[in-house]
Length: 116
Image (cartoon, one colour):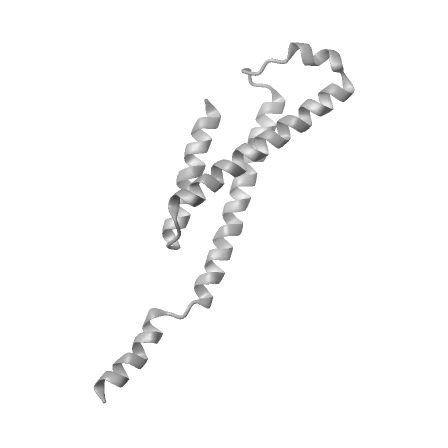
């Protein structure tokens, strides 16, 4: 249940970033969901492989619905991955905006030509 709230928040967070810079909102919202779920899957698989390698007997008593320390750590790592990707995209979009010519600069030439 907690993951659903995190996914909704991440989607909205990325959609606001995309809207701020004039990008397609749902593309970046889905990117946030993909980053979160991808990180969860990778961490879950790596933890499962670790458990199978160290103590194969423990795999018979896995509780998939409970909160464990491994679940909380993977949740936090996934949130940090989503946040880090957001920071990376924000810096990238700001650099792109600096490279674009400003609308006012283009308008300066038009007003001089129209007056002549």
